[in-house]
Image (cartoon, rainbow, N blue to C red; front, side, top):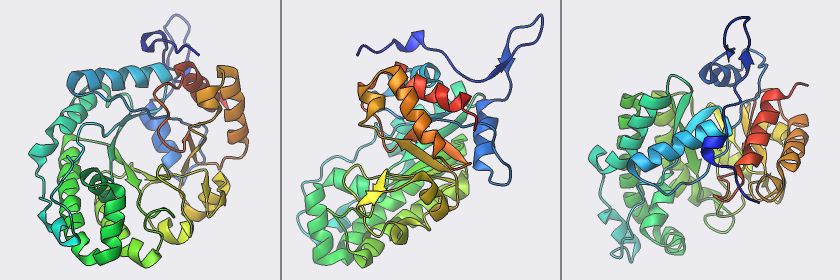
Amino acid sequence: MKSASLASLGSVLPVKAVRGQAARPVRSKRDLMQAVLDLSTPPSYIPAGFFMHFGLRGDAAVKAHLDYFHATGMDFVKIQYDEQPLPPNNEIKTPADWARLPVLGEGWFEPSLYLLRRLIEEAKSEALIIQTVYSPIQLATQAVPSALFVQHVKQDAELVCRGIENITLSLLNFVHAAARLGVDGFYMCSQGGETNRIDDLALFDRAIKTYDMLLYKEASRVAPSSIMHLCDYEGSYDKFAERFNDYPGQAVNVPLSADARPLSLKEASNLFKRPIMGGIDRHGIVTTGTPEQAKQATLAVLKEAPAHFILGADCTVNAKTPLENLRAAIRTAHEYRN
């Protein structure tokens, strides 16, 4: 299916017509998102957002993010973390070698901070600006192959944790810099505890959760409009509630399954007692079908969604996902009424 051009698709923010005047927004996207994140009031609107990697840097990345935000009509600007991978580190051959990983200062993150700074300038008046932050383990497995990381953790977690601590301190430098620039929140990603990696709960708590919690509690403190993403891109989880129910975040983006069975949105809502984001299979109809099929799939999700809900996918959608399908899903959420 051929995608529509970014420029040909517009915003779907609700508008109110006034006689003799142009239509104007009823409420800003910022207000609409914050109303859903506020559990004290029943929301009257379902926001939505889907994420796509652009693989660009500098001003090209700024343009791609803005074009995509306006083309899809999504309710917040979610900034991808495409610009700052840790380079492969061939010196890490044993668990003791992890201590060699340096603590990175703010200057190292300047490409990502430039993108954030520009998007704040261009779009903060319109919508929440949410910056992606990878977990320490996600950066660790950029420096070394995932299998080697798992091997080292199982051999001597304490030695490996010396390096994970340095990565965490590096990411805290990034989070604090982003907060000073005026970011509204973070999209905080957790990985590592999948059944095909660190399945053992005690080992997961020591080598992964300890550093997730240090980083993401601070991220939530300095910018509270944050979304916790429990990412199953690398594999599924068991003991899901035991692993994650105390993770921070004002909302939680959940996978479609856990503990070898489907995870319903209402079950996730009961577990986390916060607004839930998700519902759409990133590999499913939204990518492979037509706009009408994407609409019908969205309606099926919305019928089962909790009251405080943000429509989205279980993870980043494919770069070839038709924009018409994303737009249809988002419009369906905006127009939905129980």
